[in-house]
Length: 272
Image 1 (tube, rainbow, N blue to C red):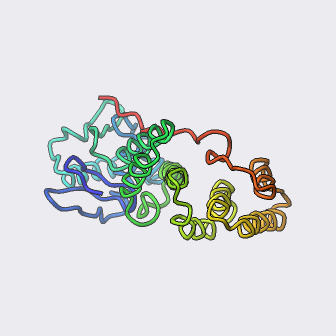
Image 2 (image 1 turned 135 degrees about the vertical axis):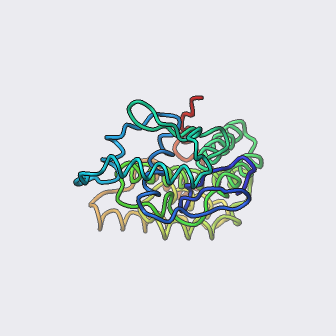
C-alpha cells in the first residue's frame, strides 16, 4: 500500500522513503535506533532509554557517543541532516512523524474506519476498509528486521495482534455480507496457522454452518476441543460451546460471535 505522504514503513521490514524509492536501513544499530524513535514518534526518548534499548544487557562505555553517531547517520538516511525532523532535546531525541507518514498509523486508521462501518451494518464498505488496511502490510511480522530490542518486541506483538484481529473482523464482515463459501478456504488456512485462536475457529464454524456444512462445522469444534485438552487440559470457552449447541440444534447463529464486536484498534497518539 503506497501513499504519497508515507515516509516510514514498519509493517514488515523497516524502510525509509528517499525521493521516489524505499530503502532498507542496513546497519542493525541504525535500524534499532530508528525503530525505537518511530514507535515513540513525537515523544522525547531519553538517551539512557536509547542505550538500554540498543544494548539491553550491558551498554558499552562509549554508548552515549555511539548513540550520537547513529542519530547523525539516521538523519542523513531520512534526508534530515539539519535535524528538523529528528530533533535533539535536552534529555534525548524526538522524531517528528506527521499524519500519514507511518504505515502503521494508516493501518490503524483504516481498521478503525472499517470497524465503524461494520457496527453501522455497512458490511461491504467495512470489508473494503479492512482489506485496504491489511494491504498496508508487506509480508510477515512488523519490524521484521529489527531484533533484540525490548521495546520493539512489545510493539511487534501489539501490531501483529492488531493484524490478526483485523483479519478476523474482515472475515466477519464478509460473512455478514452473505458470502460464507468465499471465506472458508481462508479461514481453514488461518485456523491451521493459529490452531488455538478460538475466535478464528468460531468464524470457521459459522462459515461452514452457513454454507450448509453442519457436520464440518461440528468437526472444527471437536478438533479445537481435542487440541485444547491435549496441550493445556482445557475446554473451549463458553462462546464456542454455545455456538456448538446452536449448530447442533440447527438454530440461527450470531455473526458477532461473542455478543459484540471486538474493540477497534486505536491509532498511536501523534501529538503535533
